[in-house]
Image (cartoon, rainbow, N blue to C red; front, side, top):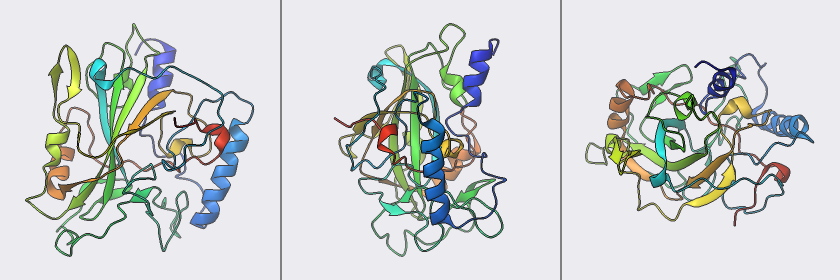
Length: 292
């Protein structure tokens, strides 16, 4: 990209997850409290807008920054699809802390590896559904995915004249470096069942009415919870995201064949080959919009 603003914005990609790699090992619950306090301190009085993700059950929010909601996704261009291991949001059918019984979100284990943030499907799977695969799928620096794992998929849309591609940079153009952004979010659960839904169907793209679109965004997973927020990812655990995003998060999960998720990770236009870590849910009401 030719101008500095585009380069800077692209560098703040939705899925960055390496900011904490050199932090010393700390207890997860303590780390979470420290990071939440640091986020509040680092954003105080600096005019940051509402942040994401959040607890969807709480509608409260005191952030005074207001921006216009982005148009419906059908009137925008799909620019990126990526997934996070565990649901970044808490709500609906995904309320079980990912690190229940271990580290809480935001900590590190004894070897300095980042503990899992986010939330998991709160209902039990059958023994067959949860039977481990022979090998992880979508393996990356932060590990891979297995049967029983929860993921949150983000369909990112832009008001700019763009086509689908890798990272947030695909949502910007030379003629529009400050587009409106919308994320349609869907939580999936991976199961060891070849008869389960094929994940690849939900990430198939095409042209609809002159707009780049995901052709099969689920319509049977509840009324989306809509709110004003920001970009996510653990880069922003201790600092505010400056970008404004209109969010729509569906409250019900879909079960998908775990192997089909792995197949998508092997080749896609978004160059997504592994799950990204989750950002801590934002709890400071001064950094949250009111859900209306």
